[in-house]
Amino acid sequence: MKFAFLSTLLMLGLASFNPENNDRKINFPKITEYPNQVPSADKVWVFILAGQSNMAGRGFVEPQDTLPNQRIITINAKGELILAKEPLHFYEPNMAGLDCGVSFAHELLKHIPDSVSILLIPTAVGGSAIDQWLGDSLHRNLQLLTNFREKTEIAKKYGNIKGILWHQGESDSKPELIPLYEKKLGHLFRQFRIYAGNKNLPVLMGEIGLFADDSTNKSLINNGMHKYALSDPNTSVIKTGDFKHRGDQLHFDSKSQRLLGERFANQYIQLTGINKN
Image 1 (cartoon, rainbow, N blue to C red):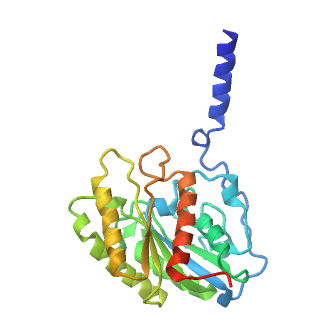
Image 2 (image 1 turned 180 degrees about the vertical axis):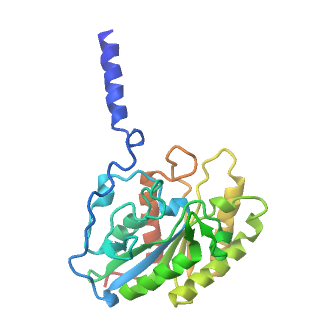
Image 3 (image 1 turned 90 degrees about the horizontal axis):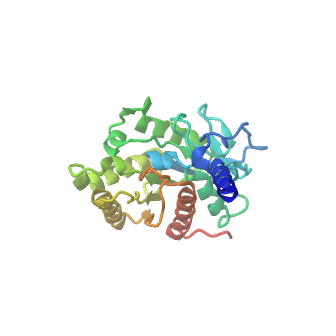
């Protein structure tokens, strides 16, 4: 009886430390920090994060995700430069969580000149379909393409746009939408590049998760990404087949989000051939 009681207490104690049982905001940053010095624009590489919820971030934020680095910056809702801490996205405060941005930046810093800083620009909004991006639809109180353009203009003031990280497709994994997804990617990325002022701007895509028992439609979306990448030498796809979900069979868990960022960074290095020297 005594052993059973102690075992129960131990299990309850472990459960209390399970992030999924705690307030999702428990580790959110308590203060906003600003760069000690705004780096010169020629020393800032800008990456724009776009797509839907797995790019906007739904993972559990842990303390390691909020440690500031003077070489990793982002913007707040006012367009001000701040030190990057998760969560980066601020459009959906009631759903915000860990995305892949800070992890991407940390990994990329290992491979680029020490004089370069990274500016992460968040533009992703959960539940957004590709037609809503193309049509500049008002989605969750935000005009998607207009917001992307506005944030791109802010980014140009602070640095050089070096790439776009795109994760989207769950909302398009319907039989009637799948056949045109590949073509729509081309139209959207062309528009992104026009706003960025670089027709050859690298765009990296992440596969969507295949967590449900029947993920045939999602697999077809991923196939569309890979097919599109074959036609666009400045585009590449990051594989996510080994990722885990946070318990909802849809959103990547925290470990997977960090892996996504690392893979985006390493794929960017491979695609562009950059090095630290």
